[in-house]
Image (cartoon, rainbow, N blue to C red; front, top):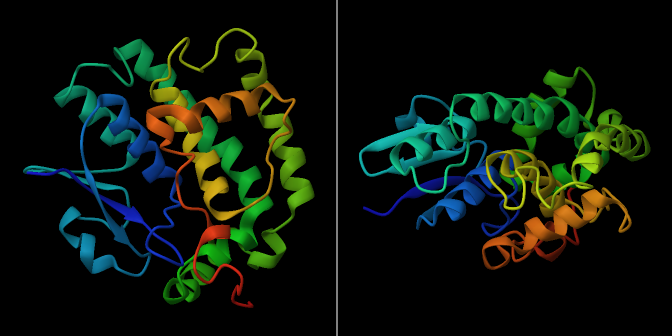
Length: 239
């Protein structure tokens, strides 16, 4: 049976922007595993009700259904042990640090930078849901969250540990990429897919890592659809 990944889509079905789904796509490519994607919308909860929850990614692998990007990493390492993503227990514990670092340090800075670009990349039928749920979570309007200057300044500080790392190696995990790289890079793919904003300058060591990540696996990230290329991108919906 073909593996199936339920993958968040936006203003057209080829625009896939979930950072968590991007983590999984890179993990599957790392393992050399074939899969197909099923485009999914925020409001299409019934389509993944079988998974027992309402978020993507959802990976269906034969009789197995796995949710949550990190749990999918663990599943892939257990079932397909060649080319580990996380490694043994000490390595996995370190990888969890990068999971939290991406979600609690990088993502908040990125969301300030691209919030309204993200809103306009969301499928029209999902925008009311997106606005309601995100404004409830942030306790303010999307327009108030959107603060690119503050976001970029916050991101600049958050990236300092990575700059030091890329002075030593090409990837977070060393000479070759693995789980930590994919856990972090999902956030960069999220921003790249929904926005034309430059998160880092060309002279930044992090930029070199981003370029290397984009070229991996026959240009998996570089070939991805972006909202600036999507149908309807030139006519964003007004709030």
